[in-house]
Length: 395
Image 1 (spheres, rainbow, N blue to C red):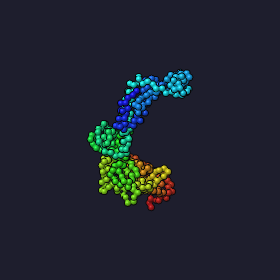
Image 2 (image 1 turned 180 degrees about the vertical axis):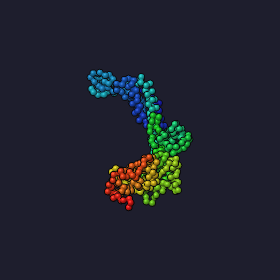
Image 3 (image 1 turned 90 degrees about the vertical axis):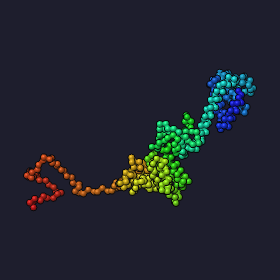
Image 4 (image 1 turned 135 degrees about the horizontal axis):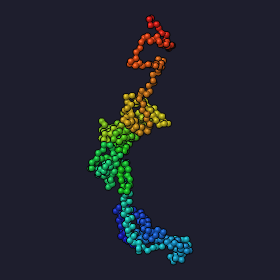
């Protein structure tokens, strides 16, 4: 089976599509061998070999030399083997070239299918390799279409579509076809439809990349982002620090008159952003994380990874936040469980006096009840040692 055009086409594929020819030939040999076995029987031990240097495709069957042949597809007699080579011995494997006359059409069809499939696989692999560089990056993409709650985007520099699901969108995000929007590349994955880019605006990576874009000190490494806790569309807490004593980490992120932080907040559709200066001291870090609430004291239990925070009574609701959001985000930011208590929680309870310990039993009179002083004569005297002796009313 000789086909110069076939091997010439393989050379062109390697040049034009940057597909490795040797890998392609190995895949093709396996596919052709499988096709041959289906045609002549799975039990047949055979291998298809391609020789691009000689432009040949040959099929070899392998048989074991035995005294008595039981399975002609796998065995050959010693006499027949020595017709091929006189030095053959029992137990050795004989390689016999098979005729390809009837296999030509099947081989051509199989080769075409393998070529198409391999081209697709290699192109997808190439695309995935190129896109892998974009993972964990912030991109400006163009909205192609909106299907129900899913947004499809054109990613610049690629022919691959970006997909943003509902849970990856910021609440109140509204998109129109043609809009240019910033997105965070969350994941590159290979699907049955080909490579797919999953992007997000609700991921904490989106906030991190916005700060890297807007704050040069973060991009240069002078200011470091320690952690981010976020309720997308509502509130974000971000802790930053700098190892350089002359650099104000929080001030650098806020910018002159809040220009930098305002740009980020606008991109987040007005989402509140609390800047927190990181501290290696957990007491100080937890207190700062509960911003904007004022904290009076913090106590921690290292073994339980828990902390108790005391705030002014009138700041309790601010410290906890709506539906517990502020304290929940502070806990995620710091990695500590936080129990917030009001200042009055620490005030000692006023001790009761002896008088307050006396219990009185009162008889409630009904509206139609009447009381006559004469009835006192019928009452038996009651001794009340604690109250002292009775005095004469006439005195």
